[in-house]
Image (cartoon, rainbow, N blue to C red; front, side, top):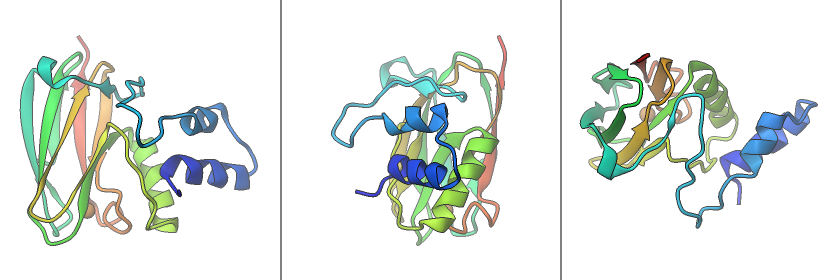
Length: 164
Ligand SMILES: [Cu+2]
């Protein structure tokens, strides 16, 4: 199966260097494994029971998120309820600006690529998706739709995590 991790590995190998980061990526869960709580630069998967609040985000075929920016305190666990009000598939992917840009480029090259991680929700038209995420690192992060062409059309929002 062609998933993000294997495509990333192949991609990095083709580019002439398999970094430790890519190897770590390739060792990740299979699709049947429970959610892996792996620390990322932008936080870690959270438990719904310990969510401090729920944030509703809508996304549409205008390639915009609403709201387009969020402020969070370091240590907060947010339950995101993401509604797709459009007629196209959209997704909500949390990451650093660099990570999302890299991932979006891969999605352009491999538009049918399957990808699924605890920091992303793929939402069909008219549906809602959920993510529970703990922002345990301060900084400027993004939520983005990485479907080919959407990120490039500006389907990106910002998350500011204020240090404690
Ligand atoms: Cu989209």
